[in-house]
Image 1: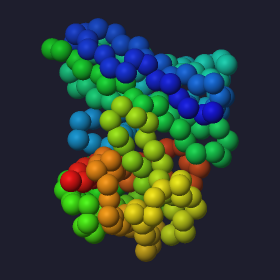
Image 2: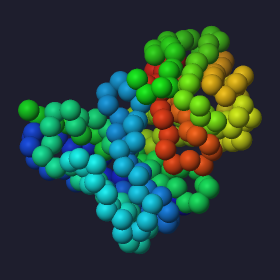
Image 3: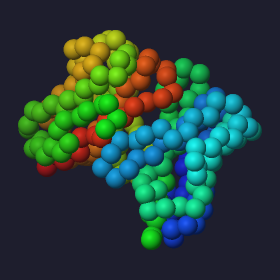
Image 4: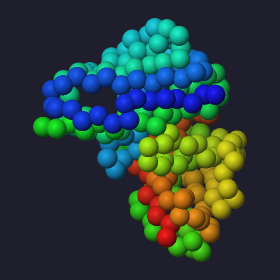
Length: 110
Length: 113
């Protein structure tokens, strides 16, 4: 159904490295969102995508809405220690419930 | 501080206890939500309220009972929970139901012994 498969499940990287994570589904969505959850906090919206093919940046973060409408990716360039946290993708089709992926846990080693 | 405040932040309870989680927002949002977050699983939507009326109940066991006395406050009453109910319970709000931007609280970490 509208299950979102997010990968990788976790990443351990060195400070300064670039990061790439993605989210796929067998269903189409017309909105993709990326949230970040800092340790001990709730998720906070990073980027929202509303059109197939759309590429949007927010500082060092770049996200794309896949052409097939069944996937999205998030890239982080030149990672820093405060990038640590759990990154969730989320998708919505029309007025259906928002679906979340299981998250990618990012650890950044100084 | 996101504007959505949850209390308590941590709660330990026995299976026979009755407790409540509280959520408060003064963002002027009309929709409020309860989500359950378990490790390595997607966020699970439990309940949705729009202007104090429950619009969705996603097959949640009756041991979880929500209450929305006004558009700024949301409660989750807990009774005779099971150990597998231990999780982080997140409250969120949005301008209206169906909005894509959710504002989350920091969550209430629940442990059921």
